[in-house]
Image (cartoon, rainbow, N blue to C red; front, side, top):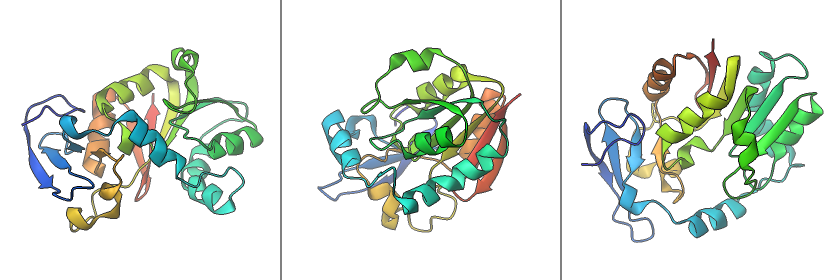
Length: 215
């Protein structure tokens, strides 16, 4: 068994094995925090990840993409004061959300390990942080969520968008887990565990959107 890469316990078990040669994934379940994660030996290499991200349609002017991002941004903005400072963590190759937030009157930075490698922004603190369709790519979610906590100011908000496992009936058939760069999968239980671990409050907005509050 492998250590859970979120809660670091060894209370894990093999959850699903995909024998498809194009994927070749072994998925573990943590019986404590309920994270489902890909074996550390089978994590995608950086060049595979980057090429996959470049294939996504993240056009900043695409209205459909903006509508998709609004699922997180609309409830997040209701909690903010104009002029607040924010960070788009895991922005990807098309910083559409950063543009939307900037145009709405917020002071926003972005960080992405492939497309916006600006370590300086990780040493600052923010009133709010958004993380859209990025948490499922975390190779080391414990490290990432601790990083997010260190950057979030008191009374700040963290919005996360990722597809939860709660309503997945057959994991092997789930389209989301078939993406070769998706390696960490969360349930609402997992998100609640994260909130308790970080001493955050949590608000589940939609099936795939959660907003944390650091008081």
